[in-house]
Length: 84
Image (cartoon, rainbow, N blue to C red; front, side, top):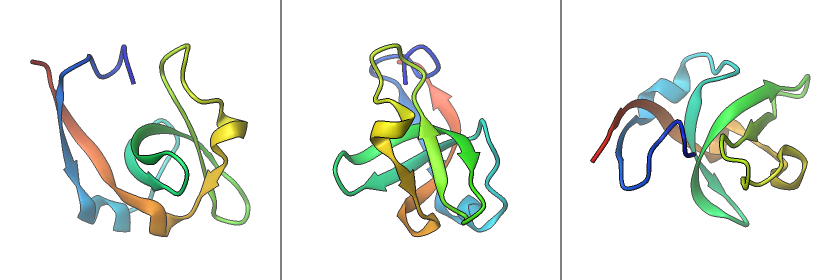
């Protein structure tokens, strides 16, 4: 997630935020079946309710390669970043 989240930073994630409306450009913590626990930015929410995520880094996994995730895969929303 560099440059939005610098290397060796700490993030504050709140899981109860996931019950509120998820919107594009929010940063979330996701449990992906292939990539494990990963921080991503919401790109869009499709008509079926699936969430498509993007990275901030040029070497990040492409939106199409990452694929959609369901709300049940969202661990929480990143509230704050603490730079080390």
